[in-house]
Image (cartoon, rainbow, N blue to C red; front, side, top):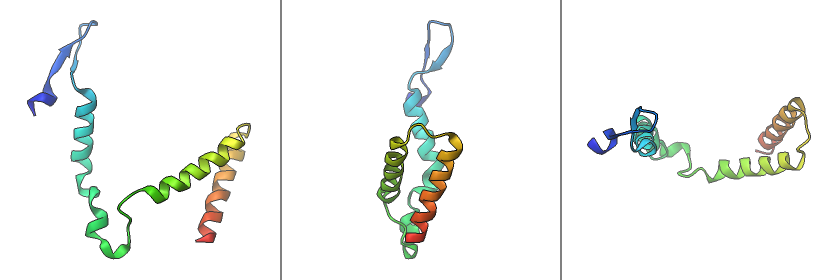
Length: 91
């Protein structure tokens, strides 16, 4: 743990954590540990153990939105809502 508490003096005279990204990752895992194994604890719900399914949905949506770059924000929001409503209807 001392490793994560190391600090370095920067050129501007301020002390900052030496391993900022590692420290951030450690605290993120520590904070979210109780959620990491939900798919195993609630096996009967059929929760997948990866996020591949949702990633494929967002990849498809991003591809569609990329094809229509010139849309206004309101039209873009409407298209996203329509995408998810059709996705939900197809089940």
